[in-house]
Length: 402
Image (cartoon, one colour):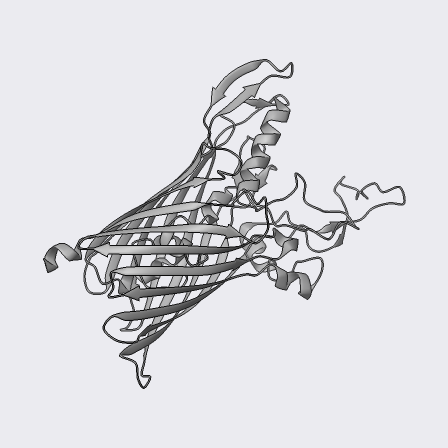
């Protein structure tokens, strides 16, 4: 039973490449990897094919129905009066064939300045067989996780907007099974996002129009999550800082380009390096806790963890810089009806090593839109290899136009 659950949780975490070992490298001499781990890493998976085709960039890209995940402040500048999108991705097809991510999001403009939106992200973890300590089957289960969001976005000026979101998170990984005599339970948390977005028109000779946009989204600011009644066994959720820059260029009535860049950083504590004695055993203080050799104590409050995440890396400034993930993306539209996209996602090998290219395409016809993306890892035998995403959008402003 214990082995099955450990294996299962490891596969789930590995699926998002937030972790590459069962235990974080906390000891001296094991500094080649120091990945930051969190609970519910599915919250960080890019759910839609539009941004997915551009390397998972979205902090300042053009507003669309899927802005909820990337920067909900963009909704205040969306052209449509109402719309929604449905996305689906078979996940980890390189390893298993029954893990899936589904995403539903929609928005409605209240007036010229205000827009409300919401979304549902559902992560199905496939069929899992639980066994007891003798290896006897005690049940087949289908663990799952989901989040439900609500958001309000408002223009503060003709060029600047802000948004506040609320999120409920539910994670049921063990279906109430006992682990080493301890009952488990679904983990729940409440979180919020705070986002801003700014768009600036540019005047460039020879171009029909251009604009330079930027946005900031601090997402998943919320309580720790636990899968048991032990108050000490609580984990951070993936609070994330996203800074986006994007330039859109309309060359003429038919050809449009957009270049985008995102910078991300998890705002949770970095695992420290713990002291060892001469025999290689952990050094303990008077309270029985391990003595930290380098870094900061990770057992802190959510707000303290967000603050110290900017300076707590045991390797100092050089390691802190490796915690930034950068993404670049390119999008081309012909006649606002057909799009091709490409992007690159880069994460330090010390912090997880996700590095991949993406390709994508999109089609718009009347009120409907269809997008898909394809992921190409930089190394072979990557569990994310050949990942596909599909998104179907409905733009109800098109009904009025017709």
